[in-house]
Length: 285
Image (tube, rainbow, N blue to C red; front, side):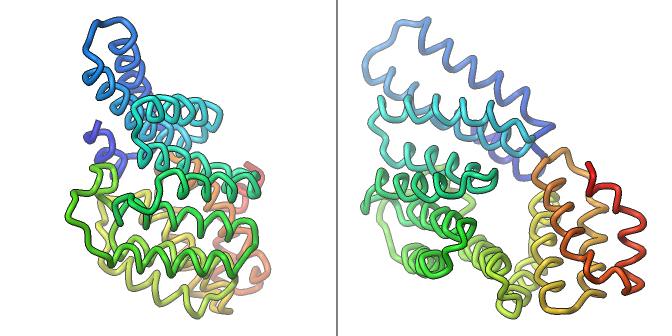
């Protein structure tokens, strides 16, 4: 299961979807068709919940949103039955993130906040910081700047707090740099490029290049922020890097279209005009 998470760091959803769903089906079959004690059953339900989360995340990245939602809902049911409230929060927050990005912004806000409440104030700081970042993104997508910025601040404060307990394994990636990326994404969406550009440039300067999808996604926000800062030549340079990255991810494909749309007002700039000539066909994809 954790191998799937680590694979998702370097591979796109289209490359991982089949094995992820196969592992999830095998776990469900094991739970339903085997005899086990109550405690072993609870642990199996937790595994089903965790597999559902990564399978849903991979399916969403591949553009299979209905399949992703089915996986998330299966995981929520399993985690609730296992009485793992923090895992329920992770699954519900993941579904909220998908909703926020696929035209269901108000529902995304409600579900992201419900996920945070479900996990409760005693959830590990890494997990709670992640849930707060999802709340921030949901409010951003709903064009609610102030609650988004408050959630970002609370996420940083939460991550800085100490805990004697070990963080859930699925929160392995949560760190200050990743929170800063979300900060920058929020500032970009809120059209505050002077705050977004230096953050993204700094994080990308030290980001692991093997994480190709994430690098491409983060560069797409940098390109948009540069365009909003009236720096079309630099924006075109970053956009070219985004468009040259070939990964089987619907998220990166959609971000490529977003970048091109942001550059269209600058089509008279030579660098932008060349880029649009070469890649403008993607806007009708």
